[in-house]
Image 1: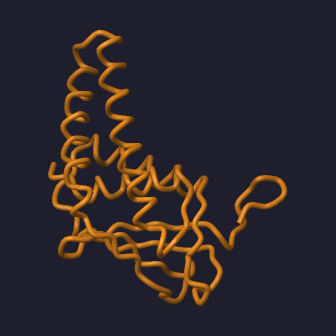
Image 2: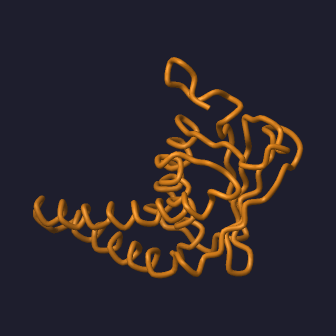
Length: 166
């Protein structure tokens, strides 16, 4: 919930995030930088409210892992007990993630040699795909947790980190 001052209460926020290192095969510097930035931004500002009224109030600690053909987001009360797992099937994300990785690769190449207008055009495409993936994740999480768009964006970045192959 958001308080009168516009801030999200501790009961409805994420205070810690970990990634299952067994889910991560290889990371280059760009991917590692994206992971660090996404986690820092997520912890700085987020809105996360489990849909199940039986889940204890937060703040929450999330653990993200790939399991079979889904993203599992384990929800724990920070520093404490396991509450539930949000299981998000990945089939609907395949095209978006593949296209996103392809555009990101072009973006990182463009930074080294392209004109500012070319970089900006590629970056607009990258952001559009990222937004599409974020909206889809926000929608797929709705049965388990309500998240705002910025929180979904950061979680989508972390999903991409888990999917990255080098």
